[in-house]
Structure formats: structure tokens, C-alpha cells
Image (tube, rainbow, N blue to C red; front, top):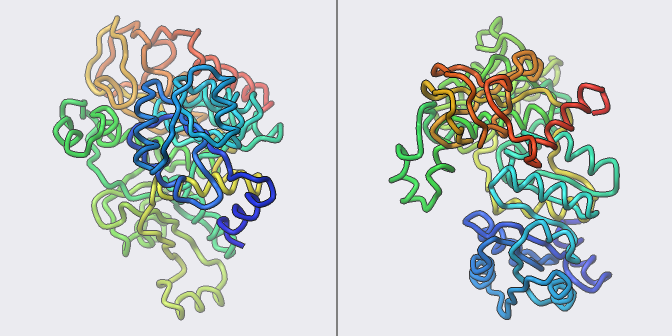
Length: 431
């Protein structure tokens, strides 16, 4: 039975659709609100945004009327129960409303992690769109959820989640996963700063820093790190190879070096540039059985023993609400961090002076670079998710990896506290 059929059946049983509380009504949030409002058996019961008018506008674009802006949580809860669309100005209050799941679309890792944690301790399921938060404290968040009766999930539609689905498909077929990843569909210029992409950002109606996070390579590093930590598949080399590659070349390039490929160790998470892989995702697999290999060749799946399982698209906010259905109906997460296999560290884009107050992802100072988590720990490297606002204690050369010893960290930040707790629990083998 499809999600839609089951959601409608649930609605008949409980008397109302799945109530979704959305935190963040920017470009992505507005699109998600519109998509959820089109889905049968669920509705956006409440929106939280620091600029409430954005929430009202998002509701209006989605066709909802009679929207009420309410600052009193008790009154807002009454409105939700009555089926009235409501907008509040504090996302941390969303778990106090009678919603079935909190959907975080803030795009800010510091906020996203707090929303997720507040939702879980408030006994609410939570779905995140901000993968940067998961790459920083995802193991802690998933462990908190799994120890109780809540679901914590990253949403469908983005490359890491859809790639996990391909990995699961390949494993279910009894094939050996050799490589998994995505095609990068924008430049890979590690020294980009927001001013370099300002015109393009304006054309795309994007924040320049958000676009810069893509073009300086950080976003790809984050997404592939998330994939690594969800599957346990490591990176082959620091930062990954990132070869130029077409779809037709996946099963000949992303295979072991002894078989003519570029990988020194398998399986590995990877990304490709140029070619025609983007905006798709892929898994390269190996058939271990000659009978299966013969059958796959006969079915024109490729020429064995290596094959590429390829999906040519990922649909971002259009698919995200599928994770709401999976959480509510099946009490299951589409995507969770399950191990701490990889870490996205921060490398200096340019020479930096002591005393610099560092900008985070997509800014003027650092770009992301994925290392094996053990190597990052040995370096005492600070995760890129914690860099923003730190004060540099010594001069750095371009290309140097930032360590905790290099910066003054504000230990009062909730995200820092959560990461410290996660690290301590990992060190004591609790996680």
C-alpha cells in the first residue's frame, strides 16, 4: 500500500491529517510547505520563522487562508488543534505544539541541531533538511532518538539519502558495493568567496554564502561525509579523488586500481566532476558470482563484473515529505548517522592572521575537507561545523587544517556543547 493510501487511512482513523510543524520559511522551506500542502493525508499545521511574515507568505503561496500569527504558545496550540494555520516566531517552541513531526528547514547548523534536540527531548519526531548539523552532531541526535520512541531522520531528496537507497538496493541484490556517491553539478573552486558568486546568487535568488558553500566544494564534502557516516563506507583518500567522469565511465574508473580504476581501497564514497553524472547519484557494484554476472550482462546492465547503478536526478524539496510518511507510518528513519567514519575538517582558503574571527561554511576563511575520522581525531582537527565565530590564535598558511589548538572556541554555544558530549560518549564507547 502506498504512503498516500496509508496516510488517508490514518486520517480516517485519527480524525485529522499528519500535522507537520515547519521551522524555516525561506526559499527551501516555502517550497516544502507548498509540497506538503499538496500531499494527501498531511498538512502544515504550524510554521516557525524569525520573520513571521515569511511564514504567512509561504502559507499564502501554498493556498492556505486564515493564517494567524501568534506569539503565545498556549494559544498557538489551541489554533493547531482547531485546524487553523498558525505562524510563530521561535522554532524552539515548535515541539510544544500538538504537531506529529517537526520539519527543520533553517539551513543554519547551529539552529538545526538545537531544533532537533529540543524536538527529541520534547518527544517529537524530527526531520532535518540541514545536513551540516547531522555531519557535526548526527550520531548524538540519532542515538537520543533511537533510545526512546522518537524518529530522527534526514529528509529524502538530497544526494546522501538517495544514494543510501541505492546502496541498500545493491546490497539487497547481493552485489558488493565498491563505490557510492554523486556527481558535482557546480564548480569546485576551493578559494571562492561570496563576492565571487554574488551575481550568480542574485540570478538564482540565493544567499551568496550558501552558493559559495557549493562552489568552494564544502557542500560536496559534507554530503559525502554524511553518506560515509550513514553507511560506514570510508573515503579512499583525504578530500576524495573527485575525478572527471561520465556515467559510462563510472564502472571503469571508480573501481580498484588493480582492475584499472583509481581506488586504492574499497568500498569508498566518492564524487565526480564534469561529465554527465550530475545531478545524479550512483553506486558502483561488483558481481561475485559468474552466473549472476552472465545474467546481468544478458540483461544489458553493463559488462561485468563491475556495474554502475545510477539515478539521474535527486528532487530535493519535492521528495522530502516522503521521510515524514516513513517516520509517522513506519516509525523508521530514511537516513541516520550510524557510525563516525568520516569528519569534515576546515582548511584555510588563504593565509589567515591571528585574531581573525572566523567565518564558517561558505565564507571568506575556510572550506571543507573530508578526512577519516580517526585521522581527524589524531590531528585534533576542529569540525567545520564549529568554526564560525571562533577566534584564530595563530597565523595560518593557506591550505592548513584548523585544529582545536589553533582557535578559541565559545564553549557556551549549544552546538559546541552537543559536539563535546558526542565526542566524550564516543571516547567512552557509549556511542
